[in-house]
Length: 241
Image 1 (spheres, rainbow, N blue to C red):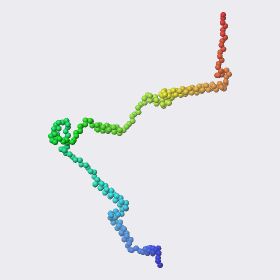
Image 2: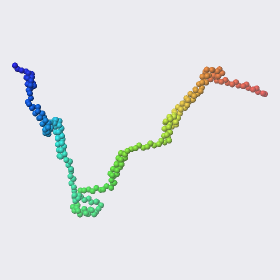
Image 3: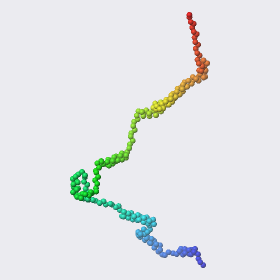
Image 4: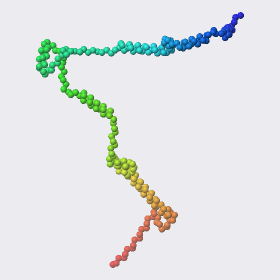
């Protein structure tokens, strides 16, 4: 009869469970662990035990260092060497207004038929303005960068003080006097205000009198609409003959 896999596994587990370890196995395992813990680990094992990203970082660093070293060693700046001419090879320039130098130059150069090919430029008599312009620019730059302070306020004049007082008061008459263009309109407004004040004052005074007359009218008082009676003329005096 063929047994199933479960029965085989169960039989193996039962045999392992019932098996007894060899004598001294635990002691040997503990001794091996102690020896491994006390023994120094070689460096190459530490290196091999590093993770993969450490290896990648190390490889990139090595490539960068090698590239920088290559560029430093193979790309040095080239210097252009300028030839230094000796004093004897320099051409002699003789001024045109000195005959003694001409004679010396003629003796030193016997084959004077050929010109040296050097043209003499006349010396400029204009003053050197570069230093003056540099000083002016420096002074302008210093003035621009200097800290600026506002000027102190100027005192008010008499006219400004009058204008300020009139603006604060707001009197229309004073404003009309100060502004001739609006004098007529402002004066008319002032006169209207005065007339209205007089009318109000008259109403206050005549109000009680009008009330008493309306309550106690008198027959002798003339009507305001009727004109007063005209006086009767005297008869003419008799003439004596």
